[in-house]
Length: 307
Image 1 (cartoon, helix red, strand yellow):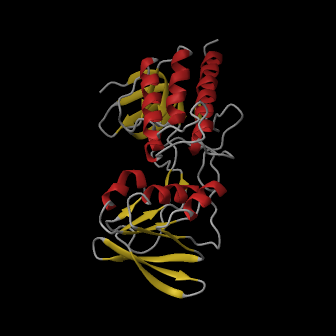
Image 2 (cartoon, helix red, strand yellow; image 1 turned 45 degrees about the vertical axis):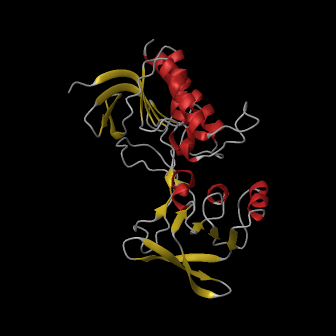
């Protein structure tokens, strides 16, 4: 199959990738966005309260769909398929999907966001491990269910608040003595009568046969104990996954893409935007800003090549 040629290939269909596509198209670049979820991880956010222009909040899935529709309206190609590999040779990027589609471009933007971190404990591969309360929380409605949430940051707090509408009892397990979630979220958690905090506790093992039935934890005060669980939600943070990228570039020790002021990586023509790059803050609004800058920088990069 002959490769389709584009000015820019954008890897990721979240806020950074879709904004990059909108800006690229408006600058006259021909763009293709590789990703199979409109809005990326936005679908995991029940209501986004801090996105400018929506004082009453906006559902993440709705915002993602609107961004997707806008990129489509601007003329971006959105085949709704994931990247399988990205390589480069002679100043050209070669992208291939799992279903065999091939694309060539002189610039590329890595905007694939991040993926949930694993607990790295025995038994985590069992059924009954979840990473999205908005997606899987309804499974526990009306079932007298006990759910365990592992984590103590903003992500864990958001997930717990969503689950509190479905599960009868939630045990929030955090390895530190106090939550890291912002104060407003902690206040909401304390007002939920079906949420129990278990602090200074480390998950040692996920119990059960094929399906998880609980966790064994070690606490500072009480030693080891077992928590029964009908579902376990892992919310211990995020990390980049760049395994499909075959292009050499510099990363941090945590695996995030290092970029310069124009958001170009150490590989010429390869840019990064959003959560996947080394940045001080990872929010939807900053991902959008990154996408705009990355596309504009790619346009300027191509303009210099064509002089």
